[in-house]
Amino acid sequence: MAPHPHEPEADELPETPAVSRAYAWLVFALSFGLLLSDYMSRQVLNAVSPSLKVEWGLSDTQVGALSGVVALMVALLTLPSSLLADRWGRVRSLTLMAVLWSVATWGCALSASFGEMLVARCVVGVGEAAYGSVGTAVVLSVFPRHQRAGLSGAFAAGGAFGAVLGMALGGHVAARLGWRWSFGVMALFGFVLVVIYRLAITERRLLPAQVGPRAAIARPPARRPMTFRVVLKALFSTPALVCVYVGSGLELFIMGAALAWLPSYLNRYYGMTVDRAGAAAAVFVLISGVGMICWGVLTDRLSRRQPARRWRMAIACSLTCCALLAVAFRLEAGPVQVVLMGAGIFFAGGTAGPASAMVAGMTPAPIHATAFATLTLANNLLGLAPGPAVTGVLADRIGLLGALRVVPLVALAAALAFALGQQRPGSPDVNDANLQ
Image (cartoon, rainbow, N blue to C red; front, top):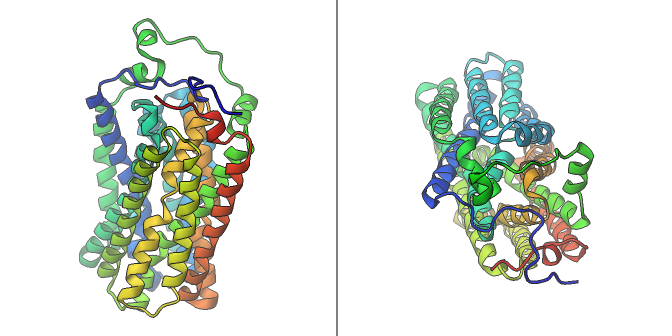
């Protein structure tokens, strides 16, 4: 049954938040900057992994574990960390997270063995666990609802751009000063940004966007705390919402594998040096970030009055990614393969914007950080964590090229999940209002 034209979405955020547009963009810029630091600290390992492999005699499985353990920690801790942030204060929580991952990245620079590096990488994951979900909730709270897919896609693209900077800068520094300095530079960048963020962004200045202008002038509305059971029910309220989580996570399996293994692939099959492989892989990741933004903005335009189109965009993105990468990795190394790889990776993260917009529309505003944490949990548990690790295990058995030929098939399962969600009760075309 179609909703009444003026029926509100599941969340109560005002269509036009009561903060200035300039301040809203400042919030976005600084939150985006910390996201860059997040992913620079996470992905710098991939630029220096060839050096670590030689110096410490690591197997591909061990290299994959160092990369995937961060995403694994994010998957395990994102939900409880986001629940705490919703109750404790999102700005305060974001600041603490950034300090923790920066300190842990510095610890990576001081590591003397695989075991020490693995522990430090675990702590990086602890710090980064809820940043994506809480940061997204903060950004969406200061912008109009009809910009959600575009903003979510742009914010998610910060991960790709951070990976670009992390791999390119990390490879450049490692080639000249050694791999330890690569981690040190990322840590210093994080320390500087967190100080700026804490001085410029406060909970009090965000309050008008979250409660509306009249409530802000008076005082925040009294609201009974939501119990864990109520929160859990809201997070999995419909089969359609579950399908969004699953489809998004499976699609990002490909992204996780690509981020982790493209530098090694270019090093082995194209004969590139470590720094050149890192820089070239960074271009591919940059392409994926551009894809996230483009698909998010396009989804906003096409689905503003027809929310069902968000599902179709996600399905089209998954199928196109699968087709292009499956063909690319069956070709000989050369220009044609490179072009098809770039085209496939353009679509690899395109579901980020549509998925975030659908989750926001189907969950209440007070638990948006927790809802995005659940999405992040699925993204990491089904995608970013197993992607590098499974690819590494397959590479030890059938070679890296053979492993990369298998990985794109996961996008078929992602497309199937989105297709099932579109047919289930509670999909956004049933719950969302036609935004005016």
